[in-house]
Length: 327
Ligand SMILES: Nc1nc2c(ncn2[C@@H]2O[C@H](COP(=O)(O)OP(=O)(O)OP(=O)(O)O)[C@@H](O)[C@H]2O)c(=O)[nH]1
Image (cartoon, rainbow, N blue to C red; front, side):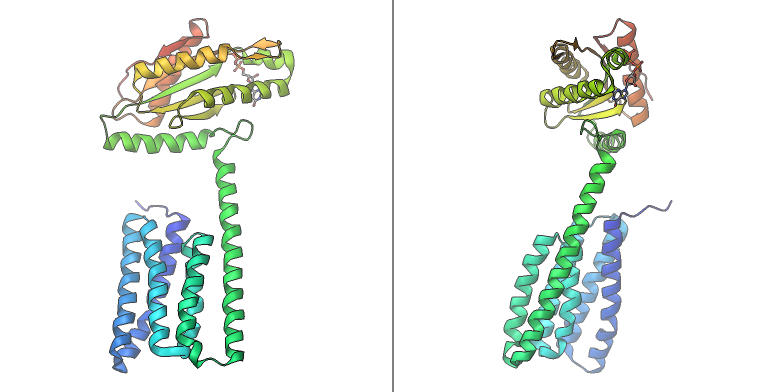
């Protein structure tokens, strides 16, 4: 089955693959010229980059790969300019650009400035004033363009991630974020089956009547007050998600069924205490389900939903436990 690659993996694969292919002709040329030091240096870069390419291809991991590419770019280019002098200065431009592709903008800028400082010490004696000016303007503008581009791209990426995973009204995680978190958590439970995790499905009681009596925007305010109350009460490691209109899920990692019921009961009491300018009070029903070995996220949610249904049937403003139906 073919695996969809992330844009991160794609960038690293293109960079490592393209630079390795670009270096290969120079390994051959330096061999023919019997320039052994350059043969070793270029072969080192070629092997490093093909190793990165293969590693990312097989594992999909990019963190180490980013650092290897950045280190190779800086080390190999510094040695090349040191050995070959000013005639090889052109190569520092792809090296500078690479830094901004693989590292965060500020880190790339810091390393790029250090890298250029090293290069300048090597080429300074062979530069006249005009050449030096050309060098500063060309490298400075390259860094400025790369930094601006990379900074904007990262900001947009962060904004898109928030848009895709956050509920716009309440600011808690949305259904998509919930599904991603459940898949990640189930993967973790498969590796560490001795650790528990529980889901608390929460549904506000008679919320339609709040909307009908006080209006939709008042209903919106009730929803945000409710989520703020829950977020304040749960641990930082627990997370709240909006599952649907007035339905929410708390994921409590490392929490057994009994502990989750205690948590749900304390959340239920906190919600009961909220009053809205004397207009109305709020209650909610809770369904609690501890993760069962081998079940998937849908089965887990379905069991929590059965418990929630039981809570609604028992008269609302109560907490019920999910049945242990094996998957
Ligand atoms: N204000 C507001 N209302 C919403 C939002 N999303 C869903 N709702 C409303 O939530 C109400 C849910 O109504 P029902 O599904 O009948 O549930 P309920 O009235 O809470 O009754 P029970 O769940 O049986 O206790 C509907 O009136 C929806 O319009 C929202 O983002 N803002």
